[in-house]
Length: 152
Image (tube, rainbow, N blue to C red; front, side):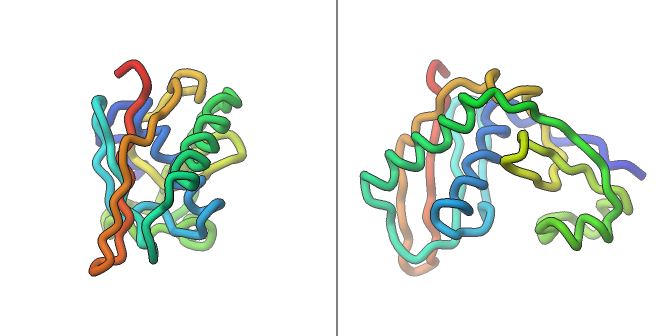
């Protein structure tokens, strides 16, 4: 059975989350966010990390995400078998009952991820993001990034 999108996230914020995740992977070597909360007004993503980000790193991260958004990348979906998804993607967040066919969201050639959420069709629909705060919890090793989309 093909998994139909069930979550009703804000499409712009949710697609920006995909880009933020991939940018964290590329710039800081993290995995994708371990938890997140996506809303229209503001969103947050938590990453396993070993330290806080300094102001220069936060500005670089924000700029990098916005550069990807500005590339006007198409956002597409495809479907693969669970076995293929397991070989090519991190499927640890998929529930056991996700089925044998897994939906993959591609943000241009920048990011590929199993996902059931709603997305824009092109990154030009997102607008710029602003990172409004970051916090690091040394006990848990979690870096939290809060962001919003300009104009919301």
